[in-house]
Each structure stands twice: as C-alpha cells, then as structure tokens.
Amino acid sequence: MSQVKAFVTGASGFIGSYLVKELVNSGHEVLCLKRPSSNLSRLEGYTDKVSWTDCSENWKSDVKAFKPFITFHLAWNGVAAADRVIWQRQVGNLALQQDLLDTILEAGCQKFVGIGSQAEYGDFENKIDESYPVNPKTAYSAAKIAALDLMRAFCETNNINWYWFRIFPLFGPYEAENWLIPSLIKNIFTQESMDLTPGEQKLPYLYVGECAKAIAAAITAEGHSGIYNICSDNPVPLKELVTAIRDRIAPQFKLNFGALPYRYGQSMYMEGDTTALRKNIYTLRTSDFGQRLEETIDFYIKKYAKQSSLK
Image (cartoon, rainbow, N blue to C red; front, top):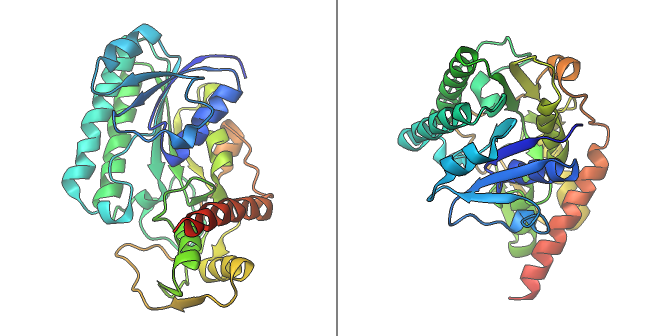
C-alpha cells in the first residue's frame, strides 16, 4: 500500500481507533480531528504518531494545509441505542458532514469514505447485498441514508471517489461498555445475574480490526465508488454466544433470557453479502473468529477483574 496523507474524523472511537492504528502501521501520514473532550485512551501508543486538529479551533485551515489524499469520516453523534431515536441529534450529523465535504474539496482531496450501518436496510430475513431496498426504522438509520445521498451527490458532482461502508455487528477490545460483550463480562464481575432479551437473534459478528483493514483498503481501490457491506459470513445465534462467554468465565452466573423486550426495529437476522467488497476493495478474513473472541474475552476479564479488585 503506497503511502498517502489521510484525514480521519472519529479517531478516538471504537472503529476509528483501529483504523488509525492500521493507517499508521501501514506507513501513512495521518491527521485526526478531535473534540476538546475526546478520550484518547483507545489510541495509547499512537497519539504521538499522528497529527491532531481540534474541532473548536481552526480545523478547516489545518485540513486545507494538510491536503489529504483521502478522508475517512467516522465521527457520528448518537451511536448508542438510546440515542438512535433522538431526531435532532441524528440530523445534526449532516451539518458536520457538509462542512467536511466543503473543506476537503478545497483541500484537493481525491477520495471520501463515509460509514453507514446495516440499520439502513431495516428488517430482513435473508443474506442481502447492497441492492436490497433501504427501510429505516429509527432517526439514526434515516440520517445515515440522508448522509449517503448528500455525500454521493456532492462527490459525483465534484469528481471525488466515494465509498460508503455499511457496517454490520463488530466485536473486539475497547468497545464501549454499553454494548453486548463488554456489558456481559462487566455484569459477570459485578452482579449476580443479567437481564436479557430472549436472544433469538442471529448476528454476523466481525472482528473490528478486520473491519478497519477493509475501510483502509479504500486507499488503493481503483475507482469503484459505491456502497459496500462489511460483514462476517458466519451469523452466530446470540443466545449461544452469550452462554458460551458466560460458561468461559463463570458458569454459575445467571442469564435471564426473556426478561427484556426487543427494542423497536430490532433485527432478528443479519447477514450481508460481501461479494462487491471482496471483488473491488478487500478480501475479508473471517476464519479467525474463535481466536479473536478469546482475545476479546481475555481483554475484558483483565479489565473488569482489575476494577473489581480496586473496590
């Protein structure tokens, strides 16, 4: 992969931190946008290997001076499940994206990457490709679709190659505590039981580092602007996954399946066809799921065992 200048928003987030590490490890020059309050703990060991610009200062001037070849836009306000139904928060993301697009156009940027979600498709029961009709069920998914349309029209008008990656469920170390795997392991160390939905979902969990490699591969994509699913090809029954993690750590811990209702718009089956991604961008590696899951479990065991010992 030839060295380029890459501008990244959302660098301190779960996916963004893995992407920044991938870019740095591949020898690229990276400029990251952050808030004054951004927690950079996920980038330990890498904060001094990239340049930073603060969104409360003259970030637009910094980007224009940097002249990125590619921009990766991962910043999004309101990713947590509870925030996905707050319309004002979700729609507010569109203004930042447009500011970003206007700025990178002036900077002469040649490629723009936006991050979508499988939530854009709404409910589905079979393996689907990118031609499947979108059917948003929340403010989050509706705003993502609007962001895609705005980005696509802007980039095509201004001859910028664009890539919209629809992300399916991910896992790995440093995920936010409110998501399933870290939440489960934290509860095992701090509670006697955990309330859950019935757990009938089948979800194609993909290791977040593999997702980051796929996103970074847009650098070398020869054209091929478009929408791409990033997804494992091995859907896992959620109840089976949760039970296996519990049994690995504390078999006596009680899992109260069915104590919680499914949230509105909950997809019971997710699997995306990644043929287009594999053909045009990157060949996903999904065969190491077991190894990566063990590494993830070990990471959270160490984290929460340490926290419990300090109380």
